[in-house]
Figure 1 (cartoon, rainbow, N blue to C red):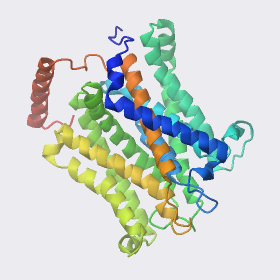
Figure 2 (figure 1 turned 180 degrees about the vertical axis):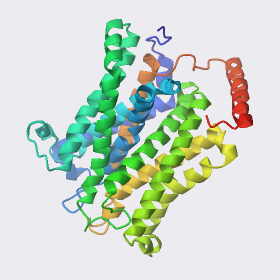
Figure 3 (figure 1 turned 135 degrees about the vertical axis):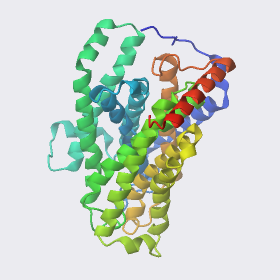
Length: 406
């Protein structure tokens, strides 16, 4: 397959504001990381024995892994269920998932008190620990994601034999990836299920592994939609709307299931009064609920917005922000009564921002030099864009007229 990606360096683009801002963020983060390793984790964070988990666990790890679920969802959809029309967005989903797990690993190496013994999970097996399962599943699934993404490298350099080998093992790889992702996405919730006396009742649940898994499906789907808009905004690649719309409908169903399970669980445990209690945790719960459940469901069920790319962008952005809020609440707000009033230091915020920045930089470089985005999606001139918009308008009108739910 021929591709138009060439190794060209546009030096002029390196001196625009965004690369300069990214360089500053990453440079300061590197200095903070060095300071952390020399003087200990307490020198750059507000973590202590009472509050051992904070922003880095909630955002860098729980959020990064959860939003990466779009990778196994899209690969399963294409390779297992045979929905070939979604193949153009599979590679970008895999790339985002792969980087999500790399961010998880990088964040973990900074967050762990003794990161130099992280390899102990490989040889010292504690099969009764949820972290043991998480460690092994993350290692194996990151390897699977790398192998799934390797097809892009094989194609770029014309390695036909390796492409053929990948084609032969692609289905087993996808099955393994879906199984591993399902296991550790839910097991991350188990880490909170074993602390019933410490987690605030609005977030604690005996079925929290199920809640974690359902929420990561919703978060992953929202991230896929968001990727489509960002690809258009920053890389000038247009993802066909007839691919994004059915994903938005799947997002509606997953959010509906999540809302049903979440509120049924709260009601079943008699925690409904806490939703309206005069407590510090109440506004955080409702901010999370509005962003993750109420706003996206309302937006995605308005007829006009169902055929609006900008409307789907706002709905997916709200769901992603709500997902982030849910994971951070799990680590901070839910433990607020027992963690001594923890609030992240500026260094914790900076490291988190640097990991997000690093992810964007790597995605931009990979998309620029490797055939990640579908061929023919690059809109180069105003005339091409006008022709595309005219064709898309005609296509969308056809869906509306015939009442299809593409």
